[in-house]
Image 1 (tube, one colour):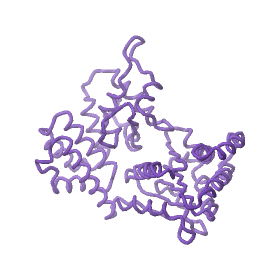
Image 2 (cartoon, rainbow, N blue to C red; image 1 turned 60 degrees about the vertical axis):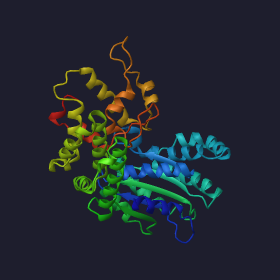
Image 3 (cartoon, rainbow, N blue to C red; image 1 turned 90 degrees about the vertical axis):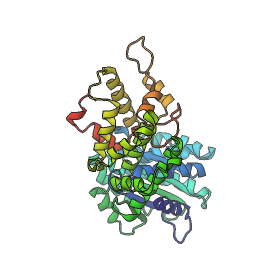
Length: 381
């Protein structure tokens, strides 16, 4: 993907001449911002240059409070650094926990980042803020202004790289665009952009090829270019649609084998399927038919999906099982959460790897919006 390479090039550039500290990844819902941010986080972890990351989730109040943003990142930076900085953090932790305003938190972050950045000016220090637009509405304008004020604060530290992803909310646009000395790179993700459309098609081609290999379909010539093209047209530049649709194909093949392939592809080629909510509804109707009479199945769904959506830090299946300790009755067996995630992997697991106790289930924000949107067809949930 071109966008990933562009971000990686930005991270690697620590020169005094051309380095920029901030990159703003902006685009509409479902265009792939969180997926791109997560991919960058993984790459930075593998290179040992990820300083800290903060995921803002409006369904978890603790993460939408801007008072938490900068102190939390400062703490994570200290924890991932050497023992000297850890001692410094220990000395400052009372101050960190008593931060009363985002402005105070920002000052603390600048101080900690400055120390870390000075250790090795040639090595990038990457900090990720995903979902800035998820900040509580009454604080978003002030928070965006504080971020824009930071644009000039790290100028002498050419190796500090702060990536912010968000939707193009007015409060953020006004603050970022009005910065007198623009010190950030703006990457706009547009679902109608030829590059975005091409990236989605490339993703689908690679993902379907992997699915074909897993299910012994490679020799059949599937997927052919026409299949990929039809799905890419339906996706209309939305990565979340492409991910969900390809996962749905994989799940149906696992259950019914290649006999179901033509039926699934025909279903996905329906014009109505361009709407991500229609795709979500189709998947849930398949997994939880309207005639299903199993109150505990729906209660399990509510508890697990609710927990996955509000977690501040995503948990793997083993930790989720320990946290929830779900039983229908006091003497019943515990809910098999691995089996639950396997069943809903179309919605909860973005890759094609086997679901294990180490798998970390995640749900896209658009799915939570869909499931809580008051749709009469979903009252059973």
